[in-house]
Length: 220
Image (cartoon, rainbow, N blue to C red; front, side, top):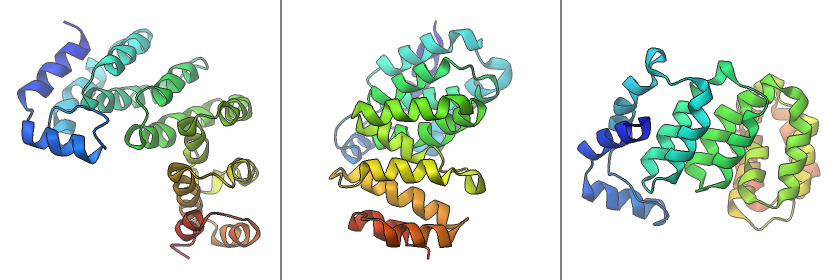
């Protein structure tokens, strides 16, 4: 039995059709669900994510592809948590896997975790890949790759590259996409906890959408 089948069996044992319908509706009917509340789902993950039970890193790509092929969203939630467990074993080529995770079955609920917790760690580990990857993703026209470009520095605090962030935001000015404008505001709001003056100055000098501006200045 594969790891995907094992975790799937656990999900199936604890599923609830009523909760599944509610979760599916909340996600705009984009995904199926087993119907497991988040705290319970994380409890089910726990044994599978213990260091002694983790599969070899070489198996990760195939496992993620399998998890992403399953209809229930719970599999993808488990998959991103699984990848995060290998944060100290990242390899340069892993960016290809992360791009797959971002561009397949894309929605904010996985993108935001992948951006801040997985791509964010990768870009710190391999800074030489930062600009070339960001440039490629920005030119792709894929909204979720672009949102990842905005949010990968979400936890960087004083290590955030303001020149890079400025360039990314300026490329996206005028976007009508809610998830882009919301992310612009989110990353600026988060950075305002570290450098409020920079954020205030940037907002004052930049033609942000009303949504981005409101979110950016929320804490100031």
